[in-house]
Length: 348
Image (tube, rainbow, N blue to C red; front, side, top):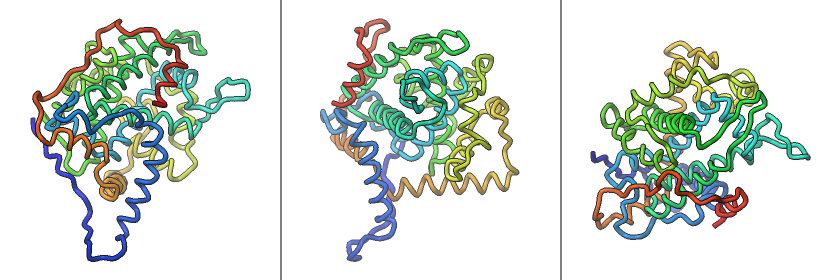
């Protein structure tokens, strides 16, 4: 399939001697993104070279189209993270193996979110899903190797005695389904020109390459199959104490509460039942979604096309020899690496 990747920007004019209001806002947002995300998490990634390299998906792919809307991608990743944390094992993986929560002086985790840790996690996720979508083939391979290596180190025991392992095939399948569902659903609801029907299923069919690169098997390749996969996992799910503290009426900050509402509003029906979410009346819900739509798309218009996506477009401007490359990972072929070595690799 071919999708239009023509960039959309708010109008400007060289005849105006000072920046227009939306340009001030866009400059501020881009500055924040550069300082807090790009400078820290996009090191070592190449979107410009080698010329003609299509990467894992290529310029005519649904994946380039979906992931090029950065604010919608960010929101989709937040939706995916919310859904996956309904698996208590994933919740405790985050508590015990990440910077997501604050820690006491002796290093033991609390159940309160560490804002810096949450930003680190989002930054790494955003770099991964932009880099694997339209980065060079080698950049995508490097990112996948690093994430797989991190997964290999995440093994442990929950407080209730249940054992978890991030290399477990069932867990990988669930985790993959939450991610592709989150990104695709945010795209459906909040992209100004979303893919629908078979075109959207084209995204699901393509994106399975990322899941395979992380070691996933038997992955869903359509929206319907993905929803079935997610629903099959319901017997394993629960609203943990930590999750409950960070959602619904327990969110006191009005801005955080608005984001929390928008995320819960995207959830599948069974997930809404689990988190005890009841949608407002249709008119109010439509008004709320319209407000979120306006914020997400205003951010995209004012910031403009991401430099990484612009560079990727230049990389293939003269065409490609093949439509896309494929991940090269073979199950069980990764060398053993320590967590310290893996984290050090993020700095290069």
